[in-house]
Every structure is written in structure tokens, then in C-alpha cells.
Image (cartoon, rainbow over all chains, first blue to last red; front, top):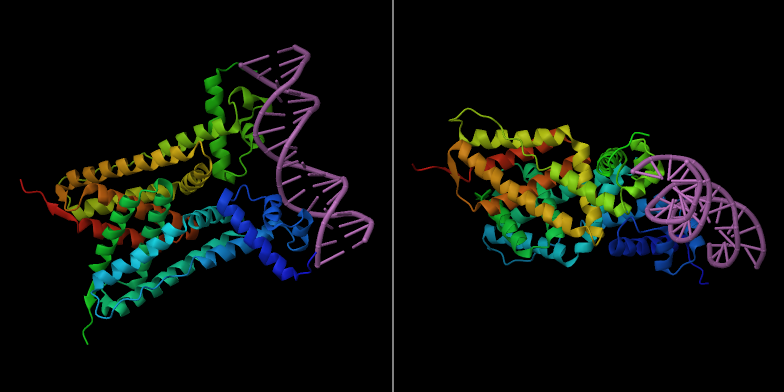
Length: 200
Length: 200
DNA sequence: GTCTATAGGAAGATAGAC
DNA sequence: GTCTATCTTCCTATAGAC
């Protein structure tokens, strides 16, 4: 068939694996299901990857990286801080609601990684990066709103990461939009109360 | 061998399954591993359970019920509200730290349940009960501290459930005690700020 | 590199003696 | 009810022709 580089093939299989996992879960993402999804013969698997673990490594790095895309909301300058906070959180939440399956897979893969000696570190590093991203995000929000945080930003970031993670997990289970939004707004109000106007 | 009732056998297998899952993860809890752990022959499995799903149903109900045990902290009457809140949260957190593997299994089983059509509802109902338990817990704390919540308790409960869930998940990954405690205390302070002395 | 065919084993479930 | 032996299916991985 069409001659492709091994890298292209690998990419193709990682993406097929992602689709299968999102659709059917990690447990059902067998090598057969993955090559089937990619439209490749079974044998193709093992001259692209030494083993299934190697593919999973690629899948995990891929999806965990992808979910770092933090949507920044363009707001008119002079928007009051509470409004900036709320709009930013709602933008984040819209992203979750638009891609629930991907986020569910993220949790599944994290649990999976914790059980595999060679992969546990990947999950650990990933949460470290989530934290860093959250710090950046909080600082960007403060800049945009023209305020300063009255609490250590790294503490806020950890607190927010945990709350949003729990909120997402809970919503993936009950899919109760109303309750989730109420909790999200409660968090937004809490955050907004932790800002002070910049003295300049 | 020793003659036992089918109920006893079932109980025995559910407990063996729990041990295997806590030790090795859900994916490695095969029927063979489970009966091996219980010291029973392979054939024993299928005159106790119609299928593996039936056993998993039992395991999920068992562990999700068990994790509802909310430790109430005995404190001297007259203890200030912030102290009551903090002590209660720390007691909860100590429980998590003492049984990390059980909690990790809880998350694994929840993810698993969401992928099985017959089990998704169990997870949903379970989170509903977590929420109820959290409401009860918050009301008990207010009673003990002699204060009232200035925010709707169901909103607080949802918010707290989500934060504590995320905190636990995050800690299971990075095992960073210091950061977790800082975040927990931030939450305690937030909660304490939402109380008002009872006018009596 | 690419594919077909198959090895080799482990999974859930059952048959049938006791 | 209890156990051994076995069936069937599906898994990951490899062998070897092209």
C-alpha cells in the first residue's frame, strides 16, 4: 500500500487509539481494535511500537498535553474583576462541556498510569504542569482585570486545580449542569473576593 | 471441604476481590486472581455469581458504601467555629491518608462503572449519597460550633465535595502532603468565613 | 517496510464427576 | 454444593514470505 514513514504510522495509530479509548474506554482499546480503527493490518502494530505499553506512553503524553490548551477570553479593558474571573471560568467550563469524553479519558488514563510502574511519573509530571498552567492563568486574569491576588498564587492555583478537577469528575458522573454551574459560580465569587485593586 | 452457605462464599469472594483490586488494580482482578486470593478453586466462582459483572456489582456497592463513614470529631463545647471546621477537615484528611489505596480504588471503580451500561447508575446514585452525607456533615459542624451557614448548605456541600474529591485525586498522584495541607487549610478558612454566630 | 498466518497464553465461562 | 478438566474466545506478540 501507500508507503509512509514510521513516524506517520505511529501518529496514525496514536490517533486511532485515542478515538477508540474515547469511544469505548481504555480497557477495550486492544491492539486489534486500534489497528482496525486505523484501517491497518494487525501486523502493522509491532513495527511501529515495540509493545502496547510504548503506544500507551504516546497516547498519554498526547492527550495530557492537549488538555493544557487554556482558552483566554478577550474582554474589554476596564471589565470589573469579578466579571473577568467569572467569564474565564465559564470559558473553561464550556470547554469541558464541549469535550466530556476526552476529559473522562484523561481521568481513566491517569488511573491507568498510576498502576504502571513506568508510567506513574508521567502522571505526576503532568499534574505539575497543570499546576504551573493554573498559576499562569491566574496571573493573566489578574493582569487583565487590573488587580492583584491577596493570597499566594501557588496556593490559589492548587486550590482551583483541585476544585475544578473535582467539579469535572462529579459532572462527568451526574451530568447535572445546573448544580455544576452553581458550584462554579460559588468558586468564581470566592476567587473574586481574593482580589484587590492595584495601587499605581 | 467445609460446607458454607452460598452467601458466605459470596461475601468471601467479594472481600478477596477487594483485596486484589486494592493491591493490583481493577484490570488485574481476574476471576483466577480473585479465587486464588480467596483460596478457592476456580469453579467456585460461577456457582456464587452468574458472571463477573455480578461480582463487580457487589464490590462496587460494598466499597462505595464503606467510604461513607464520616468521622465526627469530639470537641469541647465552646470551641470557636474556625477550629471546629479545621479539625473536622483534618480528621477527614487523616482518614484519606490512612487508606490511600482504598480511595484510589474508589476512583478506579467509578470510572469502570461509567463504562458499563448496567453500572453507571450505581455511580450516579453513589455521588448523590456523598452529597447528602456532606450536607449532614456540614449541618453537624455548624451545630457543634454553634453557628449558622450564611450560604445555602446544598451549594456548600457540592462545592466541598468537589474540592475534596479533587484534592484527594491530586494527592493520590503526587503524594505531596505539604501542598495538600495548605490547600485544605485554605478551604477551611474559606468555610469558616461563611459562618455567622447564632442569634439566640 | 508491509503484510498474512500463527504462536502461545490468559481471559470468562461451562461440563460433568463426585 | 463442590471441584477438576476443558471449551471458546480474545489477547499480545512474533515468524517469515514478499
